[in-house]
Length: 153
Image (tube, rainbow, N blue to C red; front, top):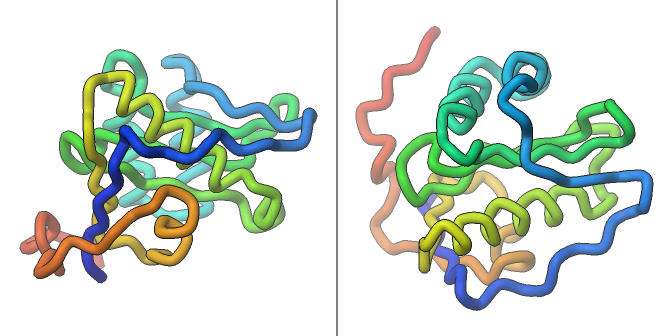
């Protein structure tokens, strides 16, 4: 899996969602709830990165909610500065535009923080990022930044 590059100065229009679904920056006191939700659905590694995004000011984690139910999340500056991710949507909430909305919320915030480009590290769904953010592959970037990553067995 190669890394992808996104031009933050050329992002598409924000996504339209059902009025019952809100996408917003997570609040610091929601860290434990959100990281637990991420850990249960996507594993400890992503939960650790999510917690790193909560350590940023402003918090670099966005969440999608239906009332108080978490449906998805997206982070940036968690793995490394300028990196988008991790991000995920609950299986039951997929195919509703939530992933696109979370992606664009985080990328737009990166642009507002002064980034011109974002890197999506080892994208497991490159077609999604190409379609919704105009991402392009970075040549010779596998495993890139992740070379030598220690993983728990």
